[in-house]
Image 1 (cartoon, rainbow, N blue to C red):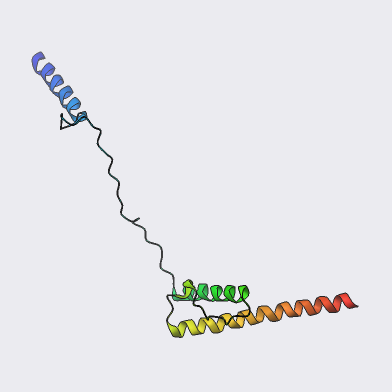
Image 2 (image 1 turned 90 degrees about the vertical axis):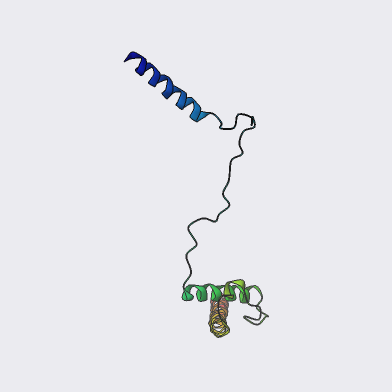
Length: 119
């Protein structure tokens, strides 16, 4: 009985040590780690058409603010690329209205300041 227990212990120890060693005894170089180059499993959430349009309008308003002398939408911003021509035209109209309102508000503020400062 003692021989079986000792033999079982030796075999178990041998198996444990064998599991830690390399299966190819002639290769003394450490193995290179493998890296995966797959994309993350979570894809970015798709934006709704309303969100895409809103971002497009914001980009067009910013474009108009950066260069007030240019026509709004003459150059299509990258954020508007997913819109078809009809949707883009609607976004340009909306952006033009917002840019015009911002200009009117600024003019009114300047008028109010001039009137308030004159009296």
